[in-house]
Length: 361
Image 1 (cartoon, helix red, strand yellow):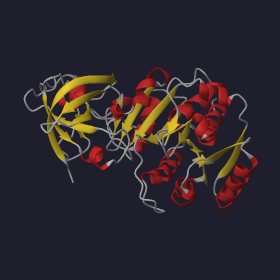
Image 2 (tube, one colour):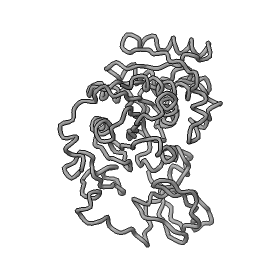
Image 3 (cartoon, helix red, strand yellow):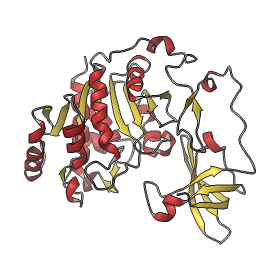
Image 4 (cartoon, one colour):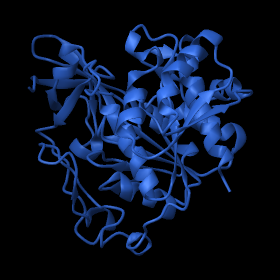
Protein backbone atom coordinates (compact mmCIF):
# COMPACT_ATOMS: atom_id res chain seq x y z
CA UNK A 1 0.00 0.00 0.00
CA UNK A 2 0.99 3.67 0.10
CA UNK A 3 3.96 4.79 2.20
CA UNK A 4 3.15 8.43 2.87
CA UNK A 5 5.71 11.12 3.64
CA UNK A 6 5.42 14.88 4.04
CA UNK A 7 8.31 17.27 3.60
CA UNK A 8 9.55 20.58 2.27
CA UNK A 9 11.00 21.27 -1.18
CA UNK A 10 14.68 22.05 -0.72
CA UNK A 11 15.64 22.53 -4.37
CA UNK A 12 14.49 21.98 -7.94
CA UNK A 13 16.75 19.83 -10.09
CA UNK A 14 16.36 18.60 -13.67
CA UNK A 15 13.25 19.42 -15.67
CA UNK A 16 11.94 17.92 -18.89
CA UNK A 17 8.63 17.85 -20.73
CA UNK A 18 5.91 17.48 -18.10
CA UNK A 19 8.13 16.64 -15.11
CA UNK A 20 10.45 18.22 -12.56
CA UNK A 21 12.87 16.61 -10.09
CA UNK A 22 13.00 17.85 -6.52
CA UNK A 23 15.04 17.44 -3.39
CA UNK A 24 12.62 17.12 -0.46
CA UNK A 25 13.65 17.39 3.18
CA UNK A 26 11.66 15.32 5.69
CA UNK A 27 11.19 16.35 9.34
CA UNK A 28 13.62 13.64 10.51
CA UNK A 29 16.44 15.18 8.46
CA UNK A 30 16.21 12.68 5.60
CA UNK A 31 16.43 14.08 2.07
CA UNK A 32 14.52 12.28 -0.70
CA UNK A 33 14.64 12.65 -4.45
CA UNK A 34 11.11 13.25 -5.73
CA UNK A 35 9.32 13.80 -9.01
CA UNK A 36 6.37 16.11 -9.67
CA UNK A 37 4.09 16.38 -12.68
CA UNK A 38 3.12 20.07 -12.84
CA UNK A 39 0.08 19.33 -15.04
CA UNK A 40 -1.34 17.33 -12.12
CA UNK A 41 -0.11 19.07 -8.95
CA UNK A 42 1.15 22.49 -10.03
CA UNK A 43 4.73 23.75 -10.26
CA UNK A 44 6.61 23.23 -6.97
CA UNK A 45 8.94 25.86 -5.59
CA UNK A 46 11.57 25.73 -2.83
CA UNK A 47 9.88 26.08 0.52
CA UNK A 48 6.63 24.40 -0.57
CA UNK A 49 5.22 21.70 1.66
CA UNK A 50 4.65 18.50 -0.33
CA UNK A 51 2.86 15.23 0.27
CA UNK A 52 4.69 12.23 -1.19
CA UNK A 53 3.99 8.65 -2.09
CA UNK A 54 7.41 7.22 -1.23
CA UNK A 55 6.67 3.50 -1.39
CA UNK A 56 8.56 2.47 -4.54
CA UNK A 57 11.59 4.55 -3.54
CA UNK A 58 11.75 3.22 0.01
CA UNK A 59 11.34 -0.38 -1.17
CA UNK A 60 13.89 0.00 -3.97
CA UNK A 61 11.34 -0.89 -6.66
CA UNK A 62 10.80 0.19 -10.22
CA UNK A 63 12.37 2.54 -12.69
CA UNK A 64 13.72 5.93 -11.68
CA UNK A 65 14.03 5.79 -7.91
CA UNK A 66 11.67 8.63 -7.01
CA UNK A 67 9.14 9.53 -4.39
CA UNK A 68 6.15 10.98 -6.24
CA UNK A 69 4.54 14.30 -5.36
CA UNK A 70 0.85 13.77 -4.63
CA UNK A 71 -0.01 17.37 -3.71
CA UNK A 72 1.26 20.82 -2.79
CA UNK A 73 -1.40 21.17 -0.07
CA UNK A 74 -0.73 24.80 0.78
CA UNK A 75 -0.60 26.04 -2.84
CA UNK A 76 -3.04 24.13 -5.00
CA UNK A 77 -2.98 24.79 -8.74
CA UNK A 78 -5.91 26.66 -10.30
CA UNK A 79 -8.74 24.82 -11.97
CA UNK A 80 -8.35 24.14 -15.69
CA UNK A 81 -9.74 26.79 -18.08
CA UNK A 82 -13.51 27.02 -18.32
CA UNK A 83 -15.42 24.80 -20.73
CA UNK A 84 -14.96 26.08 -24.24
CA UNK A 85 -11.20 25.57 -24.15
CA UNK A 86 -10.99 22.50 -26.37
CA UNK A 87 -8.28 20.90 -24.25
CA UNK A 88 -10.60 20.80 -21.24
CA UNK A 89 -13.92 19.88 -22.84
CA UNK A 90 -13.29 16.14 -22.90
CA UNK A 91 -14.47 13.50 -20.51
CA UNK A 92 -11.86 10.73 -20.80
CA UNK A 93 -10.92 9.80 -17.25
CA UNK A 94 -7.56 8.06 -17.02
CA UNK A 95 -5.82 6.46 -14.06
CA UNK A 96 -9.47 6.00 -13.21
CA UNK A 97 -10.69 6.24 -9.62
CA UNK A 98 -7.22 6.96 -8.29
CA UNK A 99 -6.80 10.22 -6.35
CA UNK A 100 -4.98 11.90 -9.25
CA UNK A 101 -7.26 10.87 -12.10
CA UNK A 102 -7.01 13.42 -14.94
CA UNK A 103 -9.98 14.23 -17.16
CA UNK A 104 -8.84 14.64 -20.75
CA UNK A 105 -10.07 15.21 -24.28
CA UNK A 106 -10.06 12.02 -26.32
CA UNK A 107 -8.86 12.32 -29.89
CA UNK A 108 -12.14 10.87 -31.18
CA UNK A 109 -14.59 12.53 -28.76
CA UNK A 110 -17.39 14.79 -29.96
CA UNK A 111 -15.50 17.93 -28.90
CA UNK A 112 -12.27 16.88 -30.62
CA UNK A 113 -11.25 18.70 -33.79
CA UNK A 114 -10.36 15.25 -35.14
CA UNK A 115 -13.79 13.73 -34.57
CA UNK A 116 -14.84 13.84 -38.24
CA UNK A 117 -11.60 12.16 -39.34
CA UNK A 118 -12.05 9.28 -36.92
CA UNK A 119 -15.82 8.83 -36.69
CA UNK A 120 -15.88 6.16 -39.39
CA UNK A 121 -12.17 5.27 -39.57
CA UNK A 122 -11.70 1.50 -39.60
CA UNK A 123 -8.63 0.63 -41.68
CA UNK A 124 -4.90 1.30 -41.23
CA UNK A 125 -4.28 0.73 -44.92
CA UNK A 126 -1.22 -1.45 -44.41
CA UNK A 127 0.50 0.92 -41.96
CA UNK A 128 3.71 -0.72 -40.67
CA UNK A 129 3.54 -0.90 -36.87
CA UNK A 130 6.50 -2.07 -34.78
CA UNK A 131 5.63 -3.67 -31.45
CA UNK A 132 8.14 -3.91 -28.59
CA UNK A 133 8.13 -5.29 -25.06
CA UNK A 134 10.18 -2.56 -23.39
CA UNK A 135 10.19 1.23 -23.60
CA UNK A 136 13.97 1.12 -24.02
CA UNK A 137 13.50 -0.30 -27.51
CA UNK A 138 11.88 2.91 -28.78
CA UNK A 139 15.03 4.95 -29.59
CA UNK A 140 16.71 1.91 -31.16
CA UNK A 141 13.67 1.23 -33.38
CA UNK A 142 13.72 4.89 -34.40
CA UNK A 143 17.42 4.64 -35.22
CA UNK A 144 16.70 1.72 -37.53
CA UNK A 145 13.88 3.58 -39.28
CA UNK A 146 15.96 6.73 -39.69
CA UNK A 147 18.94 4.78 -41.07
CA UNK A 148 17.06 4.16 -44.33
CA UNK A 149 14.05 6.49 -44.18
CA UNK A 150 15.27 9.69 -42.50
CA UNK A 151 12.13 11.66 -43.36
CA UNK A 152 9.53 9.05 -42.38
CA UNK A 153 6.76 10.31 -40.13
CA UNK A 154 6.89 8.14 -37.00
CA UNK A 155 4.20 8.07 -34.30
CA UNK A 156 4.59 6.47 -30.89
CA UNK A 157 1.74 4.80 -29.01
CA UNK A 158 2.51 4.54 -25.29
CA UNK A 159 0.48 1.74 -23.73
CA UNK A 160 -0.35 1.43 -20.05
CA UNK A 161 1.80 -1.53 -19.00
CA UNK A 162 4.46 0.70 -17.46
CA UNK A 163 4.48 4.37 -16.44
CA UNK A 164 1.04 5.88 -16.99
CA UNK A 165 2.19 9.51 -17.37
CA UNK A 166 4.13 9.96 -20.61
CA UNK A 167 5.89 12.77 -18.76
CA UNK A 168 7.91 10.29 -16.72
CA UNK A 169 10.06 9.35 -19.72
CA UNK A 170 13.19 11.42 -20.27
CA UNK A 171 13.76 9.29 -23.39
CA UNK A 172 10.46 10.42 -24.84
CA UNK A 173 11.20 14.05 -24.00
CA UNK A 174 14.47 13.74 -25.91
CA UNK A 175 12.79 12.20 -28.95
CA UNK A 176 10.11 14.85 -29.48
CA UNK A 177 11.79 16.16 -32.63
CA UNK A 178 12.00 12.62 -34.04
CA UNK A 179 8.29 11.86 -33.67
CA UNK A 180 5.21 13.38 -35.27
CA UNK A 181 3.48 12.78 -31.97
CA UNK A 182 2.85 10.52 -29.00
CA UNK A 183 -0.56 8.95 -28.39
CA UNK A 184 -1.26 7.71 -24.88
CA UNK A 185 -3.73 4.83 -24.86
CA UNK A 186 -5.70 2.95 -22.23
CA UNK A 187 -4.95 4.29 -18.75
CA UNK A 188 -1.78 6.07 -19.94
CA UNK A 189 -1.98 9.85 -20.34
CA UNK A 190 0.04 12.95 -21.12
CA UNK A 191 0.69 12.36 -24.81
CA UNK A 192 0.03 14.79 -27.63
CA UNK A 193 -3.22 12.89 -28.23
CA UNK A 194 -5.31 10.77 -25.87
CA UNK A 195 -7.03 7.55 -26.95
CA UNK A 196 -9.31 5.20 -25.07
CA UNK A 197 -7.98 2.03 -26.70
CA UNK A 198 -5.01 0.91 -28.74
CA UNK A 199 -7.34 0.46 -31.71
CA UNK A 200 -8.42 4.09 -31.53
CA UNK A 201 -4.84 5.21 -31.00
CA UNK A 202 -3.63 3.34 -34.09
CA UNK A 203 -6.32 4.96 -36.22
CA UNK A 204 -5.34 8.37 -34.82
CA UNK A 205 -1.71 7.69 -35.77
CA UNK A 206 -2.78 6.91 -39.33
CA UNK A 207 -5.37 9.63 -39.93
CA UNK A 208 -4.58 12.46 -37.49
CA UNK A 209 -0.79 12.32 -37.29
CA UNK A 210 -0.51 10.95 -40.86
CA UNK A 211 2.21 8.58 -39.72
CA UNK A 212 4.20 6.46 -42.18
CA UNK A 213 5.24 4.12 -39.36
CA UNK A 214 3.99 3.62 -35.81
CA UNK A 215 5.71 2.13 -32.78
CA UNK A 216 3.74 0.51 -29.94
CA UNK A 217 5.43 -0.04 -26.57
CA UNK A 218 4.66 0.44 -22.91
CA UNK A 219 6.09 3.28 -20.89
CA UNK A 220 9.14 2.86 -18.64
CA UNK A 221 8.80 0.38 -15.80
CA UNK A 222 7.84 -3.03 -17.19
CA UNK A 223 6.15 -5.08 -14.47
CA UNK A 224 7.11 -8.73 -14.13
CA UNK A 225 6.99 -11.54 -11.60
CA UNK A 226 9.38 -13.97 -13.29
CA UNK A 227 6.54 -16.28 -14.31
CA UNK A 228 5.40 -17.17 -17.81
CA UNK A 229 2.30 -14.98 -17.72
CA UNK A 230 3.06 -12.45 -15.00
CA UNK A 231 4.51 -9.57 -16.99
CA UNK A 232 2.97 -6.49 -18.56
CA UNK A 233 4.61 -7.17 -21.93
CA UNK A 234 1.97 -9.84 -22.60
CA UNK A 235 0.12 -6.92 -24.17
CA UNK A 236 2.54 -7.01 -27.12
CA UNK A 237 0.67 -10.04 -28.45
CA UNK A 238 -2.64 -8.23 -28.04
CA UNK A 239 -1.17 -5.29 -29.97
CA UNK A 240 -0.35 -7.62 -32.87
CA UNK A 241 -3.99 -8.71 -32.93
CA UNK A 242 -5.23 -5.10 -32.89
CA UNK A 243 -2.90 -4.06 -35.72
CA UNK A 244 -3.91 -6.99 -37.90
CA UNK A 245 -7.62 -6.51 -37.16
CA UNK A 246 -7.38 -2.95 -38.46
CA UNK A 247 -5.46 -3.87 -41.60
CA UNK A 248 -2.01 -2.81 -40.44
CA UNK A 249 1.29 -4.67 -40.83
CA UNK A 250 2.55 -5.95 -37.43
CA UNK A 251 6.33 -6.08 -37.03
CA UNK A 252 7.72 -7.71 -33.92
CA UNK A 253 10.81 -6.24 -32.31
CA UNK A 254 12.16 -9.27 -30.47
CA UNK A 255 13.78 -8.98 -27.06
CA UNK A 256 17.14 -10.65 -27.77
CA UNK A 257 20.10 -10.60 -25.40
CA UNK A 258 23.41 -12.30 -24.81
CA UNK A 259 24.06 -10.18 -21.72
CA UNK A 260 21.02 -10.52 -19.47
CA UNK A 261 22.05 -12.53 -16.38
CA UNK A 262 18.60 -14.13 -16.10
CA UNK A 263 18.31 -17.34 -18.13
CA UNK A 264 14.68 -16.62 -19.08
CA UNK A 265 15.81 -13.51 -20.95
CA UNK A 266 18.87 -14.97 -22.70
CA UNK A 267 18.67 -15.57 -26.43
CA UNK A 268 15.04 -14.68 -27.18
CA UNK A 269 13.36 -13.56 -23.96
CA UNK A 270 10.43 -15.60 -22.72
CA UNK A 271 8.51 -12.30 -22.88
CA UNK A 272 8.77 -12.33 -26.68
CA UNK A 273 8.15 -16.06 -26.96
CA UNK A 274 4.99 -15.87 -24.84
CA UNK A 275 3.60 -12.69 -26.37
CA UNK A 276 4.17 -13.66 -30.00
CA UNK A 277 3.92 -17.42 -29.56
CA UNK A 278 0.88 -17.70 -27.28
CA UNK A 279 -1.00 -14.37 -27.25
CA UNK A 280 -0.71 -13.12 -30.83
CA UNK A 281 -3.32 -14.90 -32.94
CA UNK A 282 -2.46 -12.96 -36.11
CA UNK A 283 0.74 -13.26 -38.13
CA UNK A 284 3.56 -10.76 -37.65
CA UNK A 285 6.97 -10.19 -39.18
CA UNK A 286 9.37 -11.22 -36.41
CA UNK A 287 12.69 -9.55 -37.14
CA UNK A 288 16.08 -11.12 -36.45
CA UNK A 289 19.36 -9.29 -37.15
CA UNK A 290 21.21 -11.21 -39.87
CA UNK A 291 24.64 -10.73 -38.32
CA UNK A 292 24.30 -11.95 -34.75
CA UNK A 293 27.14 -13.76 -33.06
CA UNK A 294 26.92 -17.39 -34.30
CA UNK A 295 26.27 -18.89 -30.88
CA UNK A 296 23.52 -16.37 -30.13
CA UNK A 297 22.11 -16.82 -33.64
CA UNK A 298 21.77 -20.57 -33.02
CA UNK A 299 19.91 -19.93 -29.75
CA UNK A 300 17.58 -17.50 -31.48
CA UNK A 301 16.90 -19.87 -34.38
CA UNK A 302 16.06 -22.71 -32.01
CA UNK A 303 13.78 -20.54 -29.87
CA UNK A 304 11.85 -19.16 -32.85
CA UNK A 305 11.40 -22.45 -34.70
CA UNK A 306 8.02 -23.21 -33.03
CA UNK A 307 6.71 -19.78 -34.09
CA UNK A 308 7.45 -20.23 -37.80
CA UNK A 309 4.12 -21.90 -38.51
CA UNK A 310 2.25 -18.69 -37.58
CA UNK A 311 4.70 -15.83 -38.10
CA UNK A 312 7.14 -14.72 -40.79
CA UNK A 313 10.74 -14.79 -39.51
CA UNK A 314 12.57 -11.99 -41.32
CA UNK A 315 16.36 -11.71 -41.24
CA UNK A 316 17.46 -8.14 -41.76
CA UNK A 317 20.97 -6.96 -42.73
CA UNK A 318 22.58 -4.83 -40.06
CA UNK A 319 25.15 -2.84 -42.03
CA UNK A 320 25.04 0.77 -40.83
CA UNK A 321 22.82 0.06 -37.84
CA UNK A 322 25.59 0.27 -35.26
CA UNK A 323 26.45 3.77 -36.47
CA UNK A 324 22.76 4.70 -36.41
CA UNK A 325 22.45 3.49 -32.83
CA UNK A 326 25.51 5.44 -31.74
CA UNK A 327 24.00 8.57 -33.27
CA UNK A 328 20.83 8.28 -31.17
CA UNK A 329 19.76 11.66 -29.78
CA UNK A 330 19.08 10.03 -26.40
CA UNK A 331 21.17 7.57 -24.37
CA UNK A 332 20.47 3.89 -25.00
CA UNK A 333 19.94 1.83 -21.87
CA UNK A 334 17.98 -1.29 -20.97
CA UNK A 335 17.92 -2.78 -17.49
CA UNK A 336 20.93 -0.59 -16.69
CA UNK A 337 22.93 -1.85 -19.68
CA UNK A 338 24.13 0.59 -22.34
CA UNK A 339 24.62 -0.13 -26.05
CA UNK A 340 27.95 -1.95 -25.83
CA UNK A 341 26.88 -3.93 -22.76
CA UNK A 342 23.83 -5.42 -24.54
CA UNK A 343 24.49 -4.77 -28.21
CA UNK A 344 22.25 -7.56 -29.51
CA UNK A 345 19.20 -6.13 -27.75
CA UNK A 346 19.50 -2.74 -29.40
CA UNK A 347 20.55 -4.22 -32.74
CA UNK A 348 17.40 -6.36 -32.81
CA UNK A 349 15.21 -3.32 -32.18
CA UNK A 350 17.01 -1.29 -34.85
CA UNK A 351 16.61 -4.16 -37.32
CA UNK A 352 12.85 -4.12 -36.69
CA UNK A 353 12.84 -0.40 -37.46
CA UNK A 354 14.82 -0.97 -40.62
CA UNK A 355 12.37 -3.64 -41.75
CA UNK A 356 9.46 -1.25 -41.17
CA UNK A 357 11.17 1.33 -43.39
CA UNK A 358 11.33 -1.19 -46.26
CA UNK A 359 7.53 -1.46 -46.21
CA UNK A 360 6.91 2.22 -46.85
CA UNK A 361 5.13 2.90 -50.12
